[in-house]
Length: 119
Image 1 (cartoon, rainbow, N blue to C red):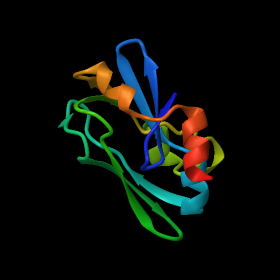
Image 2 (cartoon, one colour):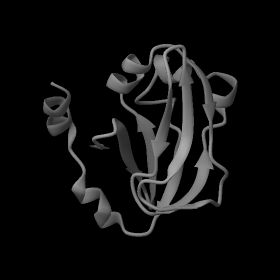
Image 3 (cartoon, rainbow, N blue to C red):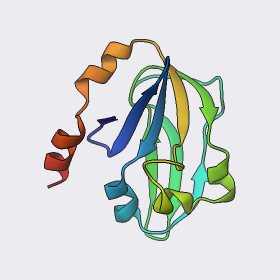
Image 4 (cartoon, helix red, strand yellow):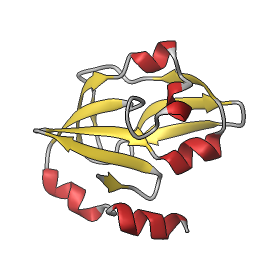
């Protein structure tokens, strides 16, 4: 897995990248009550707003970590947004994307670097 400074995780599955938020981020958000998912077949550029997460504390945006196309979304989050708190590194992934250039992932932190980043 790779990690961003925005507390997203990225997992490569074949030619796709799965995107979610870290356990640290889900703890900071508190109880998640709503997730707005993107449309599939949406082309995104690094830094584009892709999802909105609303919790009892605040609303946060999930940004596209790399350039590509959204090819699948996790519909389970629409019915059960609390999954983000229950299983942030597994069942609570947000979207899968076909990445234009996999080498973009080289810029992100590995798990050890991320743990050091969050202290």
